[in-house]
Structure formats: structure tokens, C-alpha cells
Image 1: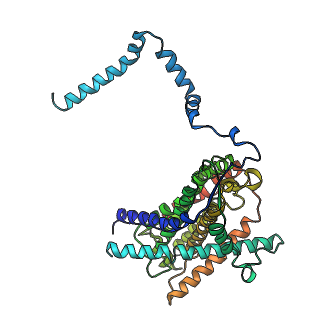
Image 2: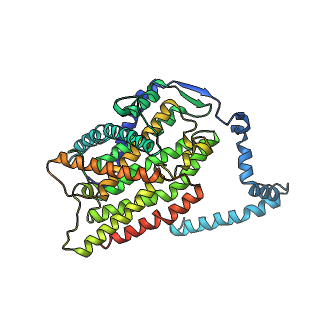
Length: 105
Length: 328
């Protein structure tokens, strides 16, 4: 038996056995939802709602975000064009390389 | 062996012996032994009420947690999935027992030590997932602390295991062969046997320290520090989830100590086969006693101290032992 088959087999058996243990247990588990234990502090102080995810992204990438906003959103079309020109040139080079490597159109 | 036969063997060893059933019983008996030993060290009585001298106390605790208590959980935690994560850890550890030569159905292949490391790694990942699986800060702290230590102790565990297996089974790197038919150098090769003993000693020191941190025993019980982070990764667990977390911890410790004790003290195969099993269990009890006595004679250290200790001792020693094992 080769190693890859054995890895696959052992992983499959692990998953199978875990389901064999978990499924009978999961049907019997009684779950009671409660507030998170925070030494008596209210949970609202510590949780971030799903709607606030843009805040988290912005706070992490704040410098990049403000740089892009200030650079791109000037309201002048030429600014946007000068920003995207390098990318267009790069695409042109890639296209040329692809055409040449294929031996013509 | 064809695929069906291998599947049957793996399934039997995983579910019964020396897999799930055996490891559960061994782990819970070891928990009783550990609790009793630590209680005596601390001038207490320890487990007393269930069974003769309290030997069935861990079984009663587990039964009550799994089947009687309800699972109280925070409003965002997917509680049943948390139980599944822990169950998968126990299943992966049970599957890895296919390479232990305790049963006639076990078997080994070349380089099976890598498969053993792959399967046993999941228990650590399960503990980390449980830590991060709650919105409460205490389990998250526990998870962060555990994963930080994991970056150092996992390589140390893997390298020292590789070194021990390499010195006992140099050609096939097989855990099954290293445990069942170890190549013990005779005294007519004095230099070789000296290096072999040295490798086992260095890897043994490295492995035992790394296992203390992997099993979150003192002085590395930082992820579950009760007085600092209210139980760490266990803080939000209750009922079946807590039961499975305790069971995973005991099964992991039992498996590692069983493998470690038999690698550290290699003996040639004996007849009849039952004698090998008895010898394995005797070595297991001796090594477990040593580990518990050493661990519980120390107090908890801080995370930075733990990382410094792990970087200074087990990691370099495991690299050294692996390098030395190439001389055998």
C-alpha cells in the first residue's frame, strides 16, 4: 500500500469514527444559550456586531484606505487615468509576451 | 494486504484496541492516578467516593458531563460544532494507534512516524479552535497562549520523536518497528551503543519538557490558568463540551506517555505477546509517575518565561538529538 492511499484511508477513518462518536452524542445534547461570562460586565461592551466589520477593515488598513481615497477620488479623470496607466501598460506587455510565446496570433 | 483488509484492521484498532476504548480507559485511569498522586503530594486525600479508593471517579465525572449535564453556551458559539471539533481530535488520536504494536491487528509501514505526527497534531489544533471558538475574551486568551506555545513545542515534539525512532529503526523510520522490534546496539559496538543511549537521553529530556507544555501541565498550564484567565480555553465549556475536552486531554497525554515510555526504554520483543503489553504498561506507569512528580513540584510560569524555556531547552535539544541520531 502506498503512502498517499494510507494517508487518505487514515484521514477517512478519523472522520468516520468522529462522526460515529459525535452523532449519538449530538442528538442527546441539551443546549442552553446564555450571556458570555465576563466577570459581571455586560456582553455589549465586548462584542462587535457583524455590521461593524467595515470599521474593523478600515481600522486595520486605514493608511492604505486614506491614501487610495485621497489619490483616486479627486474628481479629475486624468488622475484616475495616470493611476491606471501602469496597469494598462503591464497588461499590454503580458499580452505581447503571450502572443509572441504562442508564435503569432 | 488489500484495501478492505487494511480498512478492517484500521477500524478495529481505532475503535477498540488500542484505540478509542483502550485509550479512554487508560486515560481516565491515569487521570485518577495523577489526581491521587498529586493529592498525596499536597497532603490531601484525592478522589475517594466512587469505586474502591475512588478509582471510578473520572468515569463518573465523564458520564455525568456527557449525558446528564446540559451544555450552557454563549449566544454566538456553535456549541455542537465545538463538541465535534473535540471529537475529531479524539478520533484522530485513536486512529494513530494503528502503529502501536500492542494488538495483532496493528501494522507499520516505512516512514509511518510522519503519519503518526500528522494524526496526533490534530489534538493541538482542536484545543486552539476551542479557544478561538468563543466570543468571550478568556477562552480567546487561552487559545492565543496555546497557539503561541504551539509554535515552539510542536517542532520540539516532532523532532525528538523522529530522533528516537531514527535511532531505534534507522532504515525504515517506522514507529511500529521502533516500538515492536527496536534495533538495540550490543556492547560489541561500544561507540554506537553509547551514541544510541545519548540520543535517547537527549531526545527524552526534550520530549518530556515539550509534552508538559503540549498537555498544559505545570509549569506550562498558562492556557488554562484559573486565577488569571478564569480557566482559559475551558472557561466557556460545560456539560458534553467540557467532558470531551477533558477526555481529549487525557487521551492525548496517555498516548504520548505510552509512546514515549516505550521509545525511551526499548526492550527486545518477548514471548508470549501478552508479556510485551504488560511491560509497556509498567514502563507507562513509571514514566507517568516521574512526569507528574516533576511537573507538580513546580509552579506556573508566565508566557514569556515559558517561551524562553522552550526556546532554550527542548527545541535545541531536539535538533541536537536528531543530528546525533545520524551517527548511530
